[in-house]
Image (cartoon, rainbow, N blue to C red; front, side, top):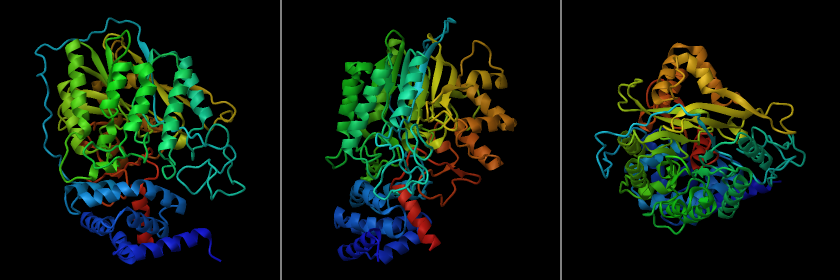
Length: 600
């Protein structure tokens, strides 16, 4: 007797054959042969012919293919395609299946067509750099303390006793197909296969409050990873709840930014030019109301009108926090592929950043830029990463630091005035990438920065973590100092007492990593806070990792695509960097379908 899942699969396949002019066998063949740029474009052409008949036939065909090829559980295929499929179909109806936009879509979905150059564009600035820029000098005063939180991914349906070793990308929930008797029951405070329970998030916030920061930054991703189930109603609930929890447990101001999971469908932030009523204004309205208590009414109003970006001055300090919505530069935001007309600055985010930095320069303030997705990652559009770098080069005297999340790793990226000559002298910017609370990519953690109150440069960066392997973790997580960058790395580069953790410091540290494998392996362990260490013993992995640390521009990193299938290497010796933040999305579905087709 056939199971309900098999019956559903057969019905979907039969319906897809009836309502589309492209046969399922032809689609399966196209998927099986999608191993380079041209074959991917051919596949898009076939999918385009289905999309032109309407969303419903497209969703039926794509869902049936997903289920038959075993890309994911049937409920995951059904839910994910129902949410993201209409955007994908919309894209295909608007573009040429062989043009530059289609090639970028193949890059995002399958990791092919990756060698397109940066589209030339020169960012305009209101004023030239000052002839005599303001000098920000330390008076040796006691540093202020700042907390950096990121990627909480709180699962409000986390269920104690549910299966923690499920067949899906995220577990510890009562799914419809969960076993009656779990093989690994979820415990109270979390599991490495699951997102954060509320108790773990509360524990972190209580520890941050105990450390008494002057203020905190949060670099995005509140919502959990069940992307095939998440809808607008859940996102609204999750965003409001986490705002209220931070307000209840932290007594000092918080300056947050948006993450790619903080909308529905996941990653979907529509451009103002997109022909849709399904934009993300509701996200901006919720966070404007929720964050106004911290960022001030003017900044909250700006957030509504600048697509999730804002600028706010930290009370009592000559420092401004400029938050940018990096999702308009994110390859997995499929609203970015619905036009063949190139848009250098979607929703004016870069123009907003320029205006905010110019205002800070005119006022003699320094700036911290915060956002979710680091600009050097492979999953950032090379065009907008390049244009952002132009802004950094112009306002490098004003920008004291940049802070991101997304990768779930404890990392950094260095910006250079000349990427062809990467030296300490040419290092002009540093991006601090915060570790995640969610245990899916290592031990839960956050950062504490000691910051000079005159220059607002980081003097020390310390990671605090809780060890999920600790026998007492499920009773009550214990948070402790994992390491201090100044204490551990400072002696390796000869850092003096008065020096900050400057871009030059971090470049010199990468030089140490090149020469000292023990130091490099220590860094590799720190990435996951010792909780999910990926071996990086060979020269290829080590060289790529160091290359990425020296790449705040995505065009300069050495990764193969982090989504979809690594079918072509950008250069010899490149390796694939996994994107822990994405979870299950269209690119992972494509990857799984192609993998299945090749095996069978």
